Every structure is written in C-alpha cells, then in structure tokens.
Length: 305
Image 1 (tube, rainbow, N blue to C red):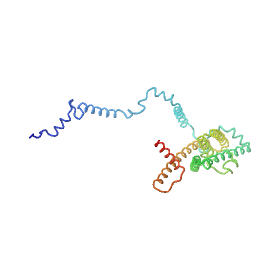
Image 2 (cartoon, rainbow, N blue to C red):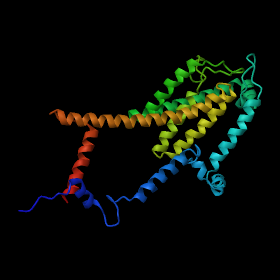
Image 3 (spheres, rainbow, N blue to C red):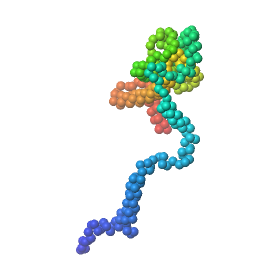
C-alpha cells in the first residue's frame, strides 16, 4: 500500500504554477518593477502641469494658421468681437433725457421726411402692409386648416405668446416722429408692443414653411415683401431696429421649437397607441396606427420572402 504524499498543498500549487522561465502566474519581478515605474511616471506627469493633456498643447504651427483658411467665418466673428468690445467700452452712453439712438432711423431719415410730408402716401403704404399681414395670417392658417400641417400655426402661437410677455415686461417709449395710420395693423391707431416685431416674425415663419414645402417663388416673394416692410417700419418709426432684427430671430427660433414640439408629440402618440393596442381589446382607429400597421405588414412580407 502506497504512502500518502507528504508534499503540502501550498508547495504543490507553487510547483504547478511555476513556469520554466521563472514566472509565477505569467508575471515576473521585472514586470512588477516596470509597472511601478509606469505609475511613478504617471504621477509625475499629473503633477507636471494642469494643461499637459489640453487640446491646444497638441496644436502645431500649421493648425494655428490653418484655422483662418478652413474656418474664415468664425475668424471674422472673433475679429468682430474684439472690434465691438472696443466700441462698447469707449462709447458715450445715451443720457436718460435723450432719445434712443437708432442707426435704422438715421438710414431712413430721407424716406421719413417724404412720408411725413405726404400723409396719403403714408396711408397707402400702411394699407398695403396690412394686406401683407393678412397674407401671412392666411397662409399660416391655411397650412393647418386645409393642408393639415400645424407647425407654422404652433410656431406663430409660440412667437406671439413670448412677444406679449417680453413686450409687457419692457415697454419701450414710442419713437419720436412716429407716423401712425388708421389703416395700419393693428387697425385703428391702437396701442401695441414695440419689442419685438410680430409683422417680421410671422413673415419669417411663413417663409420658412414655404421653403420646407419647396414653394421657392412664394418664399422669395414673402422675403422681398418682408424687406420692404422692414424699411417702411423704420421710416415711419413704427419699430426700433432692434425690434425688427429680433423679429427675424424669433421667427427662426420658434419655427425650430415648433418642429421639436411636433416630433415629441408624435413620439408620445405612438407610445399611447401602442399601450392601447397591448392593454385594451377595442380596435384602434388612427392614421398613425394605420401607417405603423402597414409598415409592419410590409416588413413581414419581406421576411417571408
């Protein structure tokens, strides 16, 4: 009968794991020393400087000079930033007792004199501008009520809501030399908010929708009429330049927000319809649901083939 092995378990494991080259579990003493040195180097590098791994530390001369060649527009904006900083910090501010300075009023001073001396011409242009406002309103409502596309209408609702909030929050004084008309919109010489221009913003909203639908000629026509409206409102002192410029930005902004609202609403509708299909027994009737079913059936036929 053989005697039991007298080798301890730890010694057996030691002999089993030991490799011919002296490694234990694939790691040598030299590997451990290299790892320690690597940790020291990393620690030293982290203490070497806060910006050691910053992006600009990797830039070369070609990268710096290539910015102006490949990105000229941001470079122009950077130069404009420096220029207007110099203008802003050295400009004499308008005292409280004086009228606001408006560069648009300066540029349209000759036309203002013509309209001031010709009330009939001023009334004619005001009436034509009101017709243009009606065209904007009619188109925006048409896209919703007739074509079933509510984005432009939602955008206009967003825009006029925020215009009311901002217009009431900061009520600017009526510009000196304002040339009102009973046929100008809003009709009847009623009061109105100056900031920002709803005329301009609504025209931008309509024009953007026309471009989405590839109605290029109609969009260009609206843009041209909007420019004329822009000039007229400055000449009659119906808006400050900042009101009109922000009106353009507001039209673009709220059109974008209306698009995001539509996307989120569609996602929510799909989730609701899916839940109804899973947890209720009644049939669901919806154009979106029908479209989903049609796409699923088409996918099933493709898999079957």
